Image 1 (cartoon, one colour):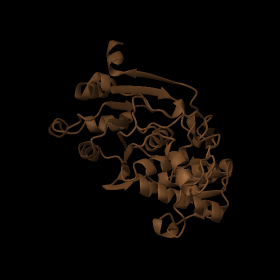
Image 2 (cartoon, one colour; image 1 turned 30 degrees about the vertical axis):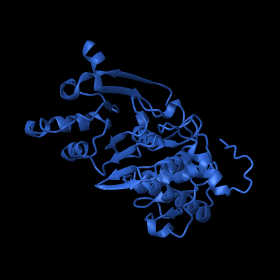
Image 3 (cartoon, one colour; image 1 turned 45 degrees about the vertical axis):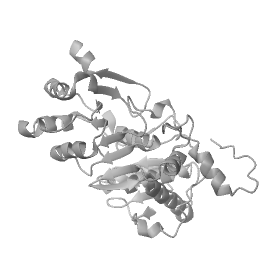
Image 4 (tube, one colour; image 1 turned 60 degrees about the horizontal axis):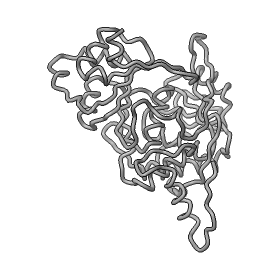
Length: 336
């Protein structure tokens, strides 16, 4: 997508670009169709710079700070590793703000992010990297040392680089995920959609500038997609470095999310907590609890329906290939 900047005249080019990027979101924060994802982060940073963007382990980063860090990381990738449009960049990091900074940095260059599990063994990573053939890898840990690695991901190493917005770029595929699936071996799944806002990026019942609680690993397909959706919509994304049922309840009470993502194992562990804990937990902010990834035991499903209401529980079945999905809410589930 290219922005029509027009005759800049005596107006500084930066101001024109910032104004054009800001126009990629509506007054309510909803992205314009076709807006490149990397530029949407800059758009929200321009419109709501001090709004919370990402929270984890009690620390919160604003849209301004996460976008500036992402712009610097993009320039580091371009300068040190010659990353350019269409290149693939593997990202192997745990849940933390640097993960999302790296993803959006790759998109800002028109490149393709390829998330990998930071817990994978060197052998598993090696097989996937052979398939991906990335320009570079962002991360450390069990990755083969023969690859070009961006080991140092702390902010101090990029402070000397410019934090100014980059020109909007989009690429197809917008992402490449990995899955063993039924074959048991590594395989890559290319998203058929570009790295631009569209109907495929819009979450079920998720409105812009809301608060989303996402406790799962960001390198998984669905959590990755919903995390991107949140930041692209100017929402506050709340993550956990690891799932703990008691800490999840604390996060709901602290951040008051309206939309939460779960898998049945998480739902079951919360439901098994002592009644005096779950009964006193304030879950009233939750308007939608979306769960997927595995069958949900009926007794666990009923517990959540009784706890927050059937209309708020939404079960979704889909695939990383993103060729279709099915959904059923608690009201329909009870009827069937």
